[in-house]
Amino acid sequence: MLRLVIGHHDPQTPTESSIMLYPNRTRHTVIIDRPCGTGKTTEMLASLKPHLKYILVTPSLTEITRFIKDSPLNVEIVAPLDNRGPKLIQLEKLLDEGKSVAITHKLFFMTLKLAPKMADYHIIVDEAPNPVTFINSIDIQAFNEVLVNDGYATVNPETRQVVPTERWKRYERPSKDQDGEPTYSNRIHNDIYKPAIQGQLHAGSNGVFAIATPNQVLLAGLSLTVMTFLSEGTYIRAYLNMLSDGNSKAVYEEELEWPDGWLEKARSLITVETLTLPDNINLSFMKQTRRSSDKTCRAIGNTLKKLFERRWIGVDRTEVLITCARDKWFDDRKGRYAGQWAQHSRLFGRDYGKGGVKWLPNKTRGTNDFKELSHMIYLYSMSPNPMVQNFLGVAGRKFADQYALSELVQLVWRLRIRQREPLPITVVIPCDRMRSIFENWLNQVDTIKPIDEVDTFSVIE
Image 1 (cartoon, rainbow, N blue to C red):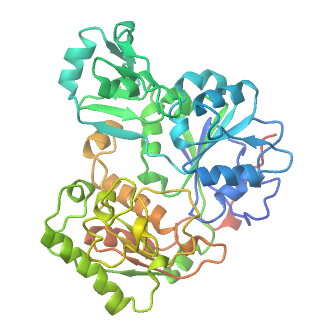
Image 2 (cartoon, rainbow, N blue to C red):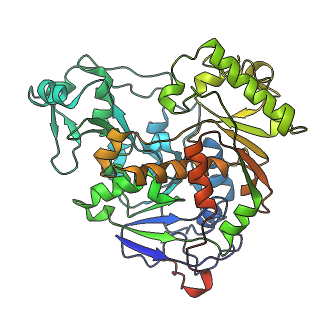
Image 3 (cartoon, one colour):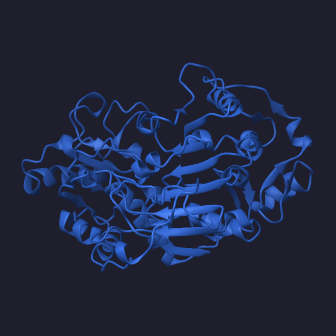
């Protein structure tokens, strides 16, 4: 693995020496690690060349619209459309036509069968996806005994990828969802057949895991570029490290880039506050998803209400972002009614939360939709799944803290601090561990070399 430090220029005025996106790289894969809100996406779009073909991958549909609108005049970016049939079929047609495309992470995860059609494309992933989940519906011993030993699947010894055999495929039930996409239903272990047939299922020594982006897709193109921040705490970086033992395409260059004084400026704009919750409250996702007693819910709601009554006097609640488990903030799937923690807070607003604080999933990335907001309440204690850590070879406290920091920073930089002219924000973090991790990082000395001390790379034509 080669780590590089590179320079920075104004992302609003990219030049021919811009590092985005095809520097004089020596590796198939490059991770561009640059702070949120410093123009990674803007610079990427300005760097697109009309004679090259691209697959641009982003978390949100709104960013796809931006990609199409803000790409250079001589570069056409297209995307599968709603109400035009299955998007996977639309994507296949666009790739056959040699079009440069913009798609969501979700659609990218479904493209195993299209991987051969990506061979002459440059794949650019905007914001690191979360590619690994632990499957708890079957343990590794049962998986080996029932599926592998009985001839329903094989396991690649290098990548640990599960490959369904014809025997398993015979039990597939042809069906499609409301968008016309195949559901890959199966009469035998239906819960894991879909990720298996899509190339996502992997079997480790201690469990069964779903890899959202199979290596055949992630490394299918002429090159792979991942744009993110604090990559050391991301699953995608650990996944590439795992793949690199058997696939040279996964060996990456990492380009670290912090604008001079960026962290110092961020430190001056962010106010970090605590919030005392009842002693029995655990903010881990697993504990949040359990049913809370009425007494606990009332205590949390009252604490949030008093925050506005005593400390955030005059703060417009529509300028506040909150994150917690969805089932705690909403009482129904559509998000119309207040959930357990929201009921007593007076922060929910009317139906569907109108006029209330803005709720956002804690893993949100790659959106500018909340960049006018000034305050955030972070009701989480983030930790990676230890089974996933072991599978990826990143077990231990160090990665767990890096992961927590990466996830927290991504959410903080959804607020108005990400504007071109950043504005002050206030972040409430009740969890002592999360607050300590964030403050320790925020108060460190800038460690990345200043921009004018290093050379930038030229664009590959």
